[in-house]
Length: 218
Image (cartoon, rainbow, N blue to C red; front, top):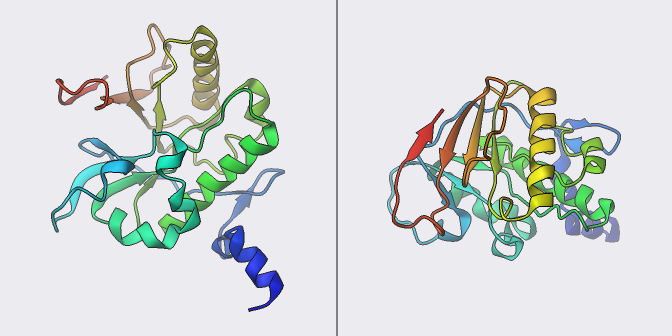
């Protein structure tokens, strides 16, 4: 293996083979997905869930990054494991508003590339919406399909007034640009948010709401 090949492998660039790119920053493009899982299961529980039958659950990554950084280091290793589930959300690598935009862009690129790689291997992949400040809008929606099912989280947002305002701003922008058919909302609903007629389903944050079950469709 040449030095160039080793360098490209270190950045997962071979995964770009046959992947369409979009925007000024060449963000990998995801195909639309219309799947609706019965529930959402954290990636940190995937290994411990047993059973050979296909589960009707989806796998989410609304977790601390350290709990799923390994899917970037070895994306091929988890294809078979995730294939047991009905669908999988793209990794939610963090976009904190005090991160340099270059780091945020890299995390968006990683999320899309992993999602595109999983789609090529036959997984049903639902795009996870990510953004920070309005400056991130220049790239966070690149590569996302229109008229698709998408996923978003409010975990850690509602207790922070600035995060709440930015969530409202970014979600409104996503509805305008992507016109999703359905939004999978993980966590508590955003009070008085105008979904502009978009259908959404709420999935509970099991860490916070252990004593409750089910979901609410609006």
